Image (cartoon, rainbow, N blue to C red; front, side, top):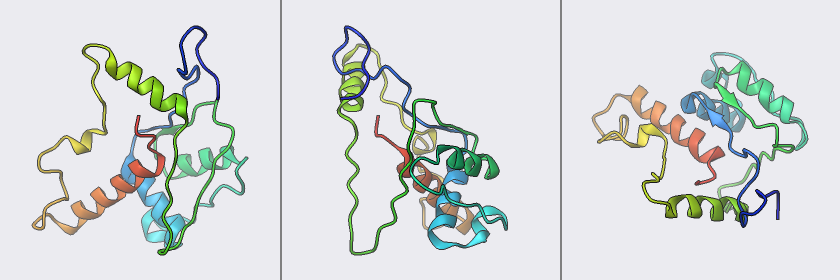
Length: 152
């Protein structure tokens, strides 16, 4: 089931995680693709990848939006899934990701890392009295996070 490190059971041998410098920018790109509205992209139309083999198209879109993202070379396909209000999408991660994360967390002094914006208390933009812009930024960050997260 995927590549593993020799001698270690079900541990991914390749880096499979997209790294993102600006989750809000990624979230706004996703909002743009969902709504077609260029207000999320600074007035630019940023094309979606043309098919699941268009990883370079995704890289170009991320670069255009200045997301500060890197997609590992091990990623060969990308799936953009549009769904309706009457559907639920459950993404099932690869077994190797679950098992390798559990093995890492079982080691002493290993933190469970999450995006830093979740660490603030309260989270900026989560309060009723917060400015609208802060709420929209938090919304974009959450969309950016859960759109690419593997819940490592």
